[in-house]
Amino acid sequence: MRILYFAWLRERVGVAEESLDPPDTVVSVADLARWLAGRDEAHAAAFADPKVVRAALDRRHVKPDTPLDGAREVAFFPPMTGG
Image 1 (cartoon, helix red, strand yellow):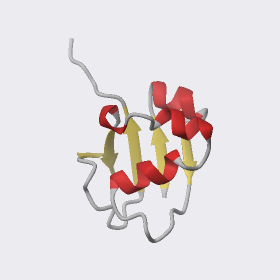
Image 2 (cartoon, one colour):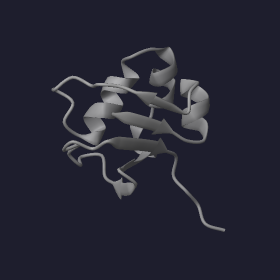
Image 3 (cartoon, helix red, strand yellow):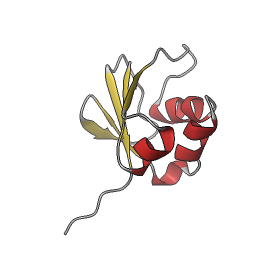
């Protein structure tokens, strides 16, 4: 699975993207965020407040409880503002 990080999430994690194979117990976007947060201090800092992290599965914005269902790409980013 390709994981993309944008804005301050990328800065905290230290990479723009990773290719990872989460365990079978990771079935939703929220599960993935929790699993990533447990990987190391950098990921823990990025996902410290999951309420402010948004996600997209295969370029479609989704809610945290959305099942991964074989998604090939998951992007994490902060809330966006218009202007």
